[in-house]
Length: 115
Length: 113
Image 1 (tube, rainbow over the protein chains, first blue to last red):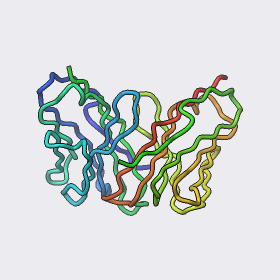
Image 2 (image 1 turned 135 degrees about the horizontal axis):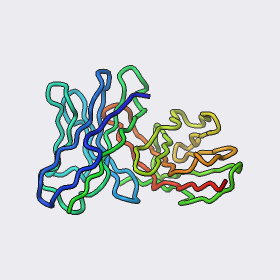
Image 3 (image 1 turned 30 degrees about the horizontal axis):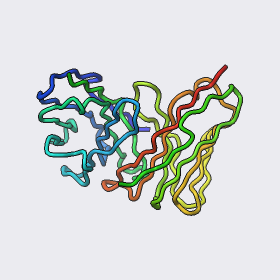
Image 4 (image 1 turned 90 degrees about the horizontal axis):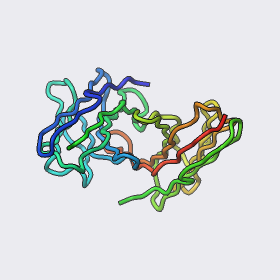
């Protein structure tokens, strides 16, 4: 199982502030995803990313959200102006190159709290 | 959007008992996956199913991909305290960059020693 690291583990921010969540890749990670999980609810898809561009995004992923992976470094999720309802766990998931392309492995998550 | 109906919502069982949970959908999926989530952590992949009718085991866990491709079940045999957690099914239409997962609402498992 590939190791997926996310930073920070917990982020507290004021409403309206920008936050950047990071997923630390390993070289053979091929596909990247962001999911979120509001407390006590199911995991929801936000966006998928391959070859330095967005492949697919959900209705949740509106103009306040953006992703990038500059120069093969950290895969980031940016929320431009946070709202109270953005409070959730945010998970990065990856698919390994050379592995089953259906199997997504999740990171430990970043708990985002918007005050 | 697509929805998965996962049941039961929660289970309280005695250590040593067998457990069964399932997911159904109105949509056909190409892949079913089962994850376990401990509090404050990310989902951990338990089993992936790729073909209709496929039955796959991982230790005490057994999962099946329904023949209609609209359902899947997960069985846990001889439960132990560390089986406690929330189990999620997830359906997937395609793999790779188009392979976003659609999750069920989870089954919360409690095991009494």
